[in-house]
Amino acid sequence: MKLTIISGRSGSGKSTVLHILEDRGYYCIDNLPASLLYSLANRVFTGETDIPNVAVSIDARNISADLEQVPNIINDLKSKNLPTEIIFLDANSQTLMKRFNETRRKHPLSDERIGLKEAIDKESELLEPISAMANLSIDTGKMSLNKLRDLIKDRLVKNKEAGLALLFQSFGYKNGVPVDADIIYDVRCLPNPYWDNSLRALTGLDEAVIKFLNSENEVQEMYSDISQFLQKWLPKFEGNNRSYITVAIGCTGGQHRSVYLCEKFANEFVESIRNVQVRHRELTQQNFN
Image (cartoon, rainbow, N blue to C red; front, side, top):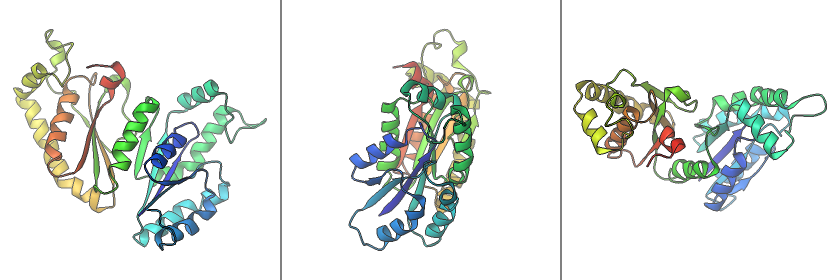
């Protein structure tokens, strides 16, 4: 039995996440008044309901005074070892503004005195205490609805009975650092297959690139050092009630070195962690095969 709180700024995809969880058997409540969170949790965890998992959305549509109490309620539930998690969705302000303009929806905090940008900024301030407590943060700015659905199914639904959910994500620094990563490694110092014309159009999934990187001592030393760190400290994160960890590995374009290492780490850690996933941000966006 678990209580999952979905939060985030308006337009970030909270409704989509609730729909996914509802389809997977969760009892879902959209826009739950924050003042009712504690009483709902008591009903869930005292066995007054026969629903195994409950997901609620709490966001800036709430009364601000009630929102301020949410961190205290969550801390109280966790102090009693009641399985509660927060999933926080967000995107940069420019992306959220674009989404509102495209859908022509009204932001819940905007009115004749407060414009869209000001409302989005105000919402960020209101939700910051909840964001700071999130077990899993997801940046939906560059995600399609299908990709968001896949990620939620892999990380939340599959994680119900699997303990720690570990995601290795490759990315390219030229497109920005993923803001939802927990641990980030920069591997741009490693030999780059890009400078070999025969490898330039390939990716870290291709055998020729794998062979090239396997033969480079620096690559293997980097892999060994990162592996030792993760082997030592991931159990500490899990022991600190962390259900989700995202390890991001970045190279210049997110095509060769970072992809190779993410795949290599996933193959290693799947032996000890049941729920291991890999996501290649740039390959997905550029539709590499």
